[in-house]
Length: 210
Image (cartoon, rainbow, N blue to C red; front, side, top):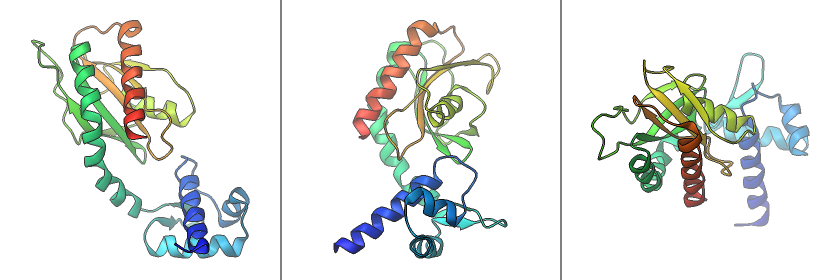
C-alpha cells in the first residue's frame, strides 16, 4: 500500500476511535484539533466515511459513529463468541453460575456468548442475543466502568431479573472492544471470592483476543 494511502487509512481509523469514545458527538473543528490535522484534511476523511455509512451528522452538525459500524460489529460477533467460550466455560464450572460475555452496542449491552454450568441443580437461563441498557445490571455497569477508566468488578442484585445476583468485570486493554465478562445466579455469590475469578477471566479473554 502506498505511504500516502496508508497514512489516510491510519487517520481515518483514529477519527473513528475518537467518535467511539462515548462523548456526545464532535464538530469537524473539534476533530481537526484533537487529531492534529487541518480542517480540509478532516473534511476529506469525513466525506469518505459518511458516504460509506461509518459516520453520521446530526441536526446540529455534530459527528457520530454511523450505523455501518454496527454491521462490522455484528460480523465480528461470531469470532468474539468463539474466542470467549473457553474462558467462559471454565468460569461457569468454577463458580457454578451462568457465565456470559456482553459487548456494548451504543448505550445497550448485548450478550454474545453464554455458558451454563454443567453440574448445578439450578442456574439462570440467559439467552445469547439478550439486550439491556448499560445502566442496568452488572454486565452493563462494568462496561460503563471501562469507559470511565475504572477497573475491578461490579456487583448487582435484581436489576435485570428478580432474585438474580450478578458480578461482572470489564475486559481490559482492547481499545476496539467495549465488553465485560460476568456471572449471574439465583444462589448467593461471595463477591470477595467470585469477583477476582470474574476479573481473571476477563483478563484471560483480553489476552486471547489481543
